[in-house]
Length: 396
Ligand code: BGC
Figure (tube, helix red, strand yellow):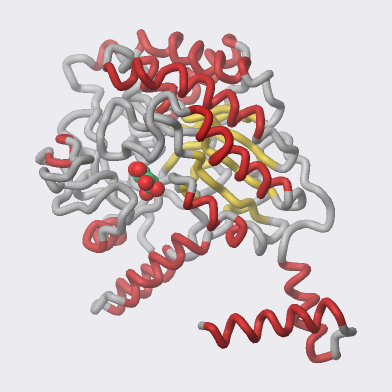
């Protein structure tokens, strides 16, 4: 490791101070052409239309290690294909900011780097599995030690296109879980924190999508308008930033895109929700967002939604047993409201621990339809990853 580092360093020094020999010139020029665009990137319109998502090194590493530990060689070959899928990289702690640059510096001009901004004070107020590192109300730390350093890094890469999902679940929780004490305590920090993030991250090479839960959440008839109002308020509080494109939906979720009738349309309460699949949800919610004064384009997480009929209840969110990798990231969606199908949740990383004695144990992760055993949220679950491959549609 050390040897490799010195060799790279030595060639960088040669490149900087001496005219490269013809032997060196080839790879150096090729590398320069690979990384970033020749001029600053200004994103407008659908950023996914002409760019694929960069397969970040963190997920690739996890998947390559997972493949290496497989005894079934056919499955290992499938896993190595998963390693090439472009996914979002979650910046879920201040410490995690350290991986951003390594995942920005080599992004080719026809790709975009994708990150999830996820460290609000009092994070995951309606559940326990993803409670974060910052206490409710600690907005100062969120701004100065999380958002500001990220902005500083992004400003160093104006020639690289970037897509961001902003704070999954946060504003939706304020719409539907405002009776919970933890969400009451977090509310102002979420609103101000999201607005701050949107305002500071509003750089020309960035496209932002504010998280809007999914059809089984803000899609209930009574939640649609309050939901649109809540998101649009954060957008306006940020000064209506140009680079906000709309919303992300189904993040770490399980809903089908256009299954009809929808998966839960026979449930007794189905009459109260006209958004029985994600397509109807984004096409219903998008116009309401516009009415409320913000852009209404959507990206939809299809990373784990290949198999339907697995959840006992629509709200079951933790490590759903039997799930498979879904449609690969693409901007061909068939809906003018949907910019792209994307993989936001890195399939194989847990949604929450099934260890009942853990501080972050959430009872949803112990339900009958949840896969067990499961490690802490974000940790690798090899058996679950293998099941995602087995159940993938389309197959790998
Ligand atoms: C966890 C994060 C993790 C993300 C992606 C979330 O549920 O709370 O720590 O980075 O999932 O796996």
